[in-house]
Structure formats: structure tokens, C-alpha cells
Length: 547
Image (cartoon, rainbow, N blue to C red; front, side):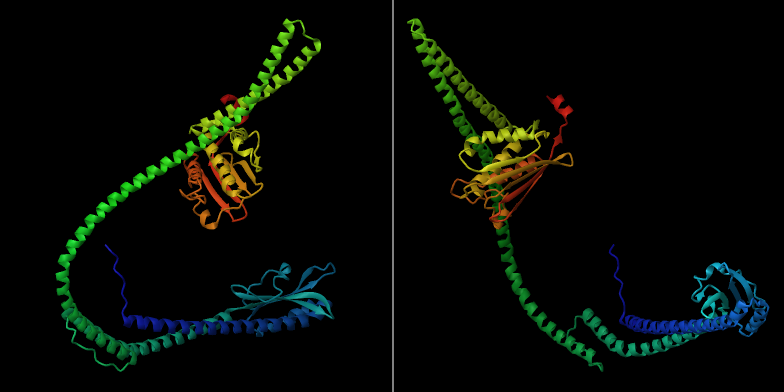
């Protein structure tokens, strides 16, 4: 059930506002006046206490010097005329500069108070407590301090005077509020009565729907303007109702034909939506197929490059082995014809050693290329996690890309701890790095003589790998930087660029590695990719177990 809204009447609101403002003003003025008066009372009492203390100190100076406390006791009895003084102590300073009790005065019926030896600094200024005003003044004679005067005055008179002032102020305040309330009631009647008449007229019109009624003029200018505006509104409503009745008939005729058109359009819209959904599903299938083709095309390029790269060492090995066979045939012929010389045999042995070294080096190089390609190819087609040294993985990736990189003057610098060993999915990392490097070569270093790629790899928090990739290429325009990870975004449209490379990188980071990737770039100042994804770091003991 909805909570009922609280409604205020103009009468009560008028009274509350006027009385609140009046009460606040009177209360503020009374508080200020009361504060000033009480402050003045306290100031007067402080002045009186200071005057008495100064008189007592002046009279007691000679008595302290001559150690005449009897005379000083008699002099203090004159304070009985000052009814508000309860206690007076006079202390003298002994040769050890310590305070000693010298003389005192206690008002008749007033209990003595303890000595105030340790409160000289605390009572250096007149201080009010709950029932008294206390003050200690030094006693000086010819510039030398000889003692102290302590005076304790009653605040009963001050409290009584304060109470009387409060009562008078409160009485005046209440009287002013009563007069203000009576004037407010009279004022609100003169304002609300015309409003009540207008409200009654509105209720009658609302119940009877008789818009021919009109509001009477008022003696108040604002309410008279309101009445005239209300009468103008009634006139407008009358005309509007007449036009509406004429239009409703026309709407009835149009509504019949409109319902039929809406039904036809709804059916057509449903069919169009169905076709749109089917088209969208086909588009997603096409996009996934293109991404898969992009991955296979990347692998195909790598196969062709590695095959070409392997041909070179194998060709050199074949050439060296052919030369060995030719020399061996010649040597065998000389041996059979008994023409074999020691120098020829030594030359054969030297050339044989050189050719065998050539064959060994090139076959070993081919084996390394094939092993690296095999691992990279397995990683690219696998989504399972394995244990690997990150620097070794990067070396394998760069070695597999060597056919494309060796013809270019660009430099790739890896900043990574050689001992960093983790457990993660090497395949997605492989594809991510290949796409980023090829993106820099094709787009970032276009028309550049020599570019540089820096790759920083480090662990964060022990379970997350941070991979920061930077190049000093031409950067990415701002309008493309915002859409760099969207599919089919490329600057090489019509030149072989599919626009799926960075989209593939984004999907591999966020889906395959459960990580995040951000890009920062300014046109002409290179590009920076920040990749962060969870891994499991392996210690030496874990590496030994996994191996």
C-alpha cells in the first residue's frame, strides 16, 4: 500500500512560516541580549574582585616585609562589608622562595578553604568555578615580589541576577510571540479567505463539469490576477471540449482503419526480425570461420617460411656431402692405381674435416628449426596448459619467425628473467606474440628504415604475469585506437588486411588466458599494449617434479 502523502493547508503553513521566522528572530535577539548582559555582569564582578585583590595586596606588602601578620589579620576584617567575598589568604615568600601562610579572612559562617600554594599559575587570571570566583595576585614591594593574595568571591549574587535577567527576557519573548500570533491569525484570514472561495469554485466545477462558472474579483492584486487567469483557462477548456468532441468522432472513423494497418505492420515486423536474427547468426558463424582461417593462414605462412629456411642448411649439407663423395672417388681411384700420395691424403683429410663440420652445423641448424617449428605449431593448435620457461618460448617464437624477420632491419629486445618458469597455455601466448610482432612490422614500421620492439615480462603478486609490448612505430590514430580490438578494423583494406589480427589477440587474452589487455598510443609516438593474465609460477622443486 502506497504511503499517503502529507498535505499542509495554506492557513497552517502561513502561521508556521510567519511564527517560525518571528520566533527565530526574537530568540536570536533575546539570546544575544542575554549573552551580552550576563557577560557584562561577569565582567563587573571580575573588575570588583581584581580591585579588592589589588587593594589587599597593596596594604599587605609592608606587613609581609615586617612580618606583622596580626595587623594584617585586623585589616582583613574590614572585608566583612563586602558581602560577596568569602575567603582571603595572604601568602609570603620565605628566603627559600617558597610560599608560607601569612594571614587569612573567612566570611562569618563561611568554612575556611585549603591553602593554594600550587595554584599560582592556574589562578593568575580570575577563574569561575561552580560556586565561586577565584583569583591570585602577586604582592610586590618596590618591584620585588614578596608574596601572593588569594581571594575567593561568591557567585550567588551573579547567579540570582542572571536568573532574573533570563526570566525577564523569557517573559518579554513570550509576550512578543503571543502578539505576533494574534496579528498572524488576522493577516492569514485576509489572505486565505479569497483562496478558499477559489478552491470551492474549483471543487464545484470538478464535480459538476460546469465550465461556464467564473471566479469573482479579489481585493488582493495577486489573487485577482490568479482569478482572471483561471477564468481564461475555463474559457479555453470550454473551447477545447467542443473541438475534442468534434475530433473524437473523426478519430473513431480513423481508428478502424488504423487497427488493420497496425496488425499488418506487426506481422511484417515479426518476419523482418526473424530474418534479421537468422542473418546475425550466419554473420557470427562467418566471423568465427574467418578467425579460424586467420589462425590457419598464420600457421601456413610459418610452414612456408620454415620450409624455405630449412632448405638452406640442408642444401649446404648436400653440397658438402657431394664434394666429399667426389673427393673420395678420386682418392679411391688413386689408391687402386697406386698413385696415392701422402699430400693428397692429407688434403683429403683436411677437406673432409671441413665438409663434415659444414654438414654437422647445417644439419644441427635444420634440426633446431624443425624442433622449434614443431613446438610452435603444437602450441598454436593446442589450448592445454603446460610448464615452460617464458624466455625459451619467446626464443622459439622468434626462431619460427626468422624467415620473415631476417630480411628486415628491425630489432626485437626481450626483457625477461631467463629463470622465469610458469604453467600456462603456450598456444594462445604464441599466437598473441606473432600477431603483435607482425602488426608492428606491417603497420607500425611502414616506411621506417629501422624499428625497435621492446617486450617486458614480469610476475605481479606471484600469480599474474604482466606482459608489456612497445614499439617505436608510427602509432595508431585516435579514431582507430578506440576500435582497435573490434573485428574487421584495418588500415590495409583492399591490400590484404582482414582486420581480424587484433580481434583475435583480444579473444585469446580475455577468453583463452582469462586476462585483460589495454592499448595506449599516440600518432607518431609508437604503441604500447599491456597484457595481464593469471599463471602459476613454478619453483625449482616443482620444475624437477614436472620434468
